[in-house]
Length: 129
Ligand SMILES: [Fe+2]
Image 1 (cartoon, rainbow, N blue to C red):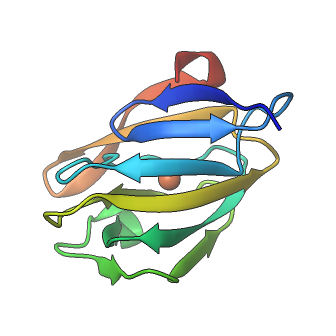
Image 2: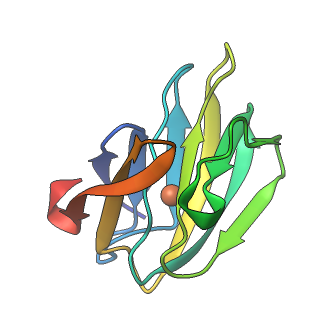
């Protein structure tokens, strides 16, 4: 099956089956790459680490966790709409993850940290990544 490739800002190369706005997609993460805090709009989703090691930080009550959770190969995270997290590769080796969203990902809010709390900084739509 042919695939098309799109670039998700701050992360990685995503390959997506034709005719689908998002996922399942394969993300490659170079050491140091991270998404920054973002949500997935009204989409629920899940991802798994296929290779390497990722770190996920969430922000309970709008306050970012200081360190987050280490996700080893086989780790699975699933989430509902409006879930906010920051995912990155803090290791020295590349990582690969597989992501899926339902309904397809169409918007993402991006957040900055101000005074120890998340503040909505921008909204991105599918055409922007
Ligand atoms: Fe995400």
